[in-house]
Image (cartoon, rainbow, N blue to C red):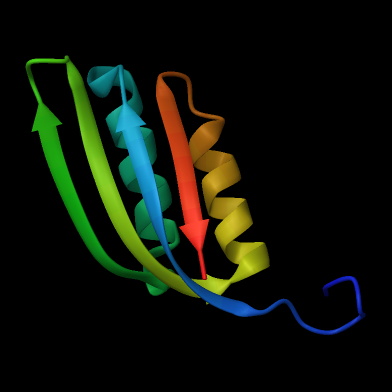
Length: 87
């Protein structure tokens, strides 16, 4: 429910995930992405070896509550940084 008492709105957006500790964080990230797979439209992952990080870009389509839950859980994983932009 949103502030006006209605359902949360569906949004299209981009979620950027930077994984700094791939060995420990990547399995947790992948598990969450599998759990939320119904809102993931597309995914691109790049190991950026020069910087010692992995970067995942997601295109998502879902309601704001679900998107917020996903990004919140991802951001709670040690060694993971998350940013999102929604329409």
